[in-house]
Image (cartoon, rainbow, N blue to C red; front, side, top):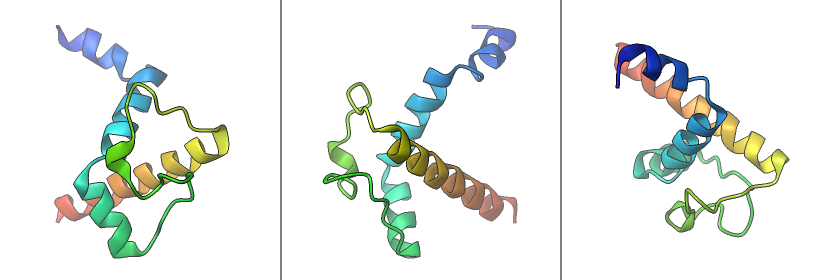
Length: 84
């Protein structure tokens, strides 16, 4: 894979969706949420990220938007921490 094909794939909504789901199921994201005492209301399995399946996790649009916002905040704060 060359660099230009990688750059083109970053605009693919499916890539962001898969990345977002992978981040949401990570232990780092879970610890971040608990440290902020922010629990997304994404449904009955909202706090059990290990049960989310990347291929089958189809959240309603409002819940997908909440997850999107949380993941973006997590990434922003993580990058800010790493920048120090």
